[in-house]
Image 1 (cartoon, helix red, strand yellow):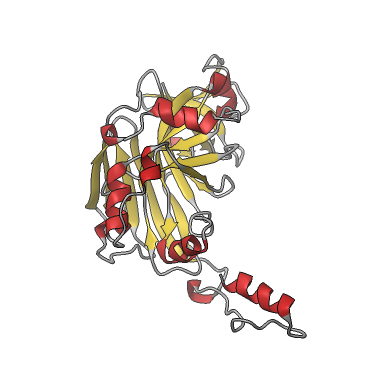
Image 2: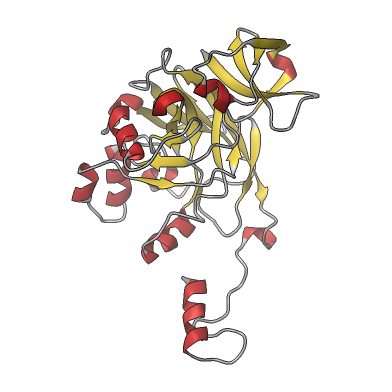
Length: 306
């Protein structure tokens, strides 16, 4: 099945769960797609809508959690080689992931504001698994892990992150294809910017298969319906790997396409109003803070400028 979350013209902002049926969307009798997945799709049909009359949202607009793995060797090796680094031996011991922000989800055909504080906005071409019943994969969707690379470099030097380099937006869509129709083993993956193909890779190049990724995600914890598990970036699947400085700009149309799932399309919006021109707020000189100077205020300034 091809499942979705959609918003009719007069529907609730959070959307309704649905099933794609040709040129129509069949609304499902459940509060959200997480419930549909938890019930293994065993829910009744409700109203039927013309697909042209509804807006598709992210399949799971508010997931309980998002773990994004680094499971493609080519992506890691190329990005590190561009910085004069080699692959860490630990990468081959177990699949590694980071948590990203479940409150900053965007869906297909929406505008993603250009984040404040960066001049190096990047896309990342990924596939994401969504957890269904019993901690198993309920289906797959396309994922764009937007990244602010200049912010990321500074964060990673501190030894934590990525954090602010990632948490402004992650896009998913256009639909969720259930695991009985798309098993996540192989698919051509492409990325285009303003119609120009910039990336092309193969899902079959995953170094760690989905069962290993899932086992690592579930170790010492519990996976819940709606949790999202990202594959990591496919080889060639980001500007960082290309090392050509062609970073995304406001107005760019970015398309992530995964064979068997569909096209996730977003437009880069104008700079975020969080600070004028998208630049970060000015920080005090290192070692100074308002008030009486001293060891404590100096430490605070070092933390603020890290």
